[in-house]
Structures are given as C-alpha cells and as structure tokens.
Length: 122
Image (cartoon, rainbow, N blue to C red; front, top):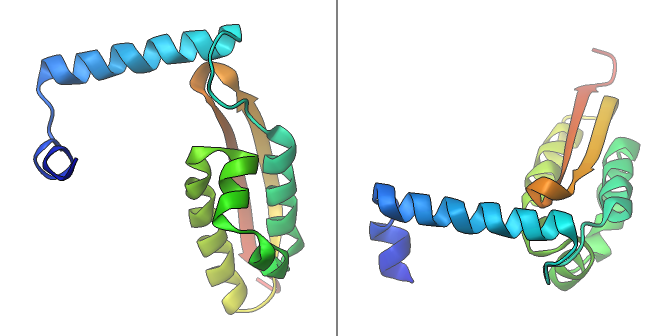
C-alpha cells in the first residue's frame, strides 16, 4: 500500500483507464440500485449543513468518527474540511451562512453541497 501511495501517484495511462472504468461501472451499479455500497444519506448531509448554518458547532463535538462513517459513509471525512472552515470562520467571531445548496447525485455516488458564509457585520 505504501508503495502504491508513494510511487503510484502518477499511474500509467493503462492504470488510470482501468481505475476510471471500475469507478464508472460502480457508479452505474449504484445508480441502478444493484450495488452493495452504502446508500447516500441526504438527511444526514442536510442536518450537518444546518448545524454549520446555525453557527454552533458544539453539537458536532459528540459525533464520533464511527458515527460519521455509520451515518454518512466512508467519504464522510470530506465534511471535516467543511467543519474546519466553519470553525476557523467562527473563531473570528459570529458568522452567517448566506446560501446553502445540496443535492444527492447517486450517479456520482455522492451528495454535493455548497455554502457561502461571512463574518457578521461585514
């Protein structure tokens, strides 16, 4: 695994094509409902976005790594970047989320969201 992660950062065109084919096939099966991958959890995603918008991130303190994976899947680590960004913004003072967009996209095996936020008073 270490060799693949360190030396495999630049796969050959054949390796890249094989990986893309596997991902494409997995997405087709997922969208068709024939995959054994965990289903998307839009309710969890929207709840997470609502916590960010509320500006009180202390609720997330009680969420364990295991609960993130159990509720939101193995890619839930990506939301930690959202949490870090909102925590950094909140460290400068209260903030306000101006807009939020979310959509579950089974064909991409993902839920996608966007928020915009600013410090209050600015």
